[in-house]
Image (cartoon, rainbow, N blue to C red; front, side, top):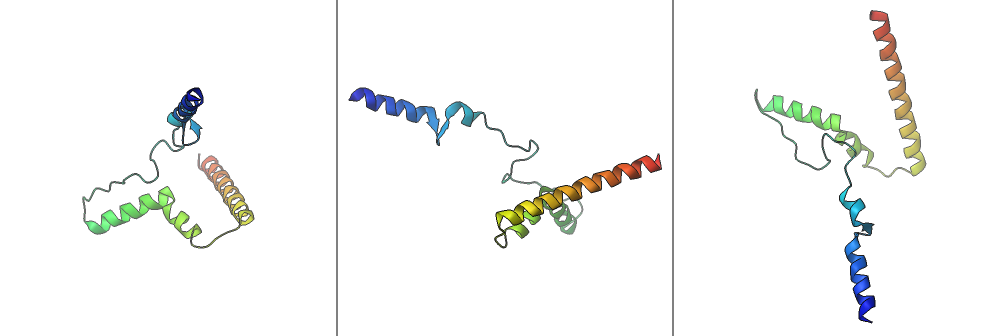
Length: 106
């Protein structure tokens, strides 16, 4: 009986939150520049108003305002798929138009 108890404790040590320990420890976030939820620094050189503008720009670039807006109301998974598809098509069109403009100017 003591063997089965030791085996279960060994299994618990191998698994960390239901995942194998080696996979859990090798996890890395997708964005390498900044982890969500980590503190953000804004240097105040030219007044508080300027610092607020810089902070707002950083938050917009990070996508915080967009996420807050999307979480105000529940959206069905099908609506989320449509929205993401629409955004990706918009991004592709925008990149193509930039490429065409850069080819024309050179």
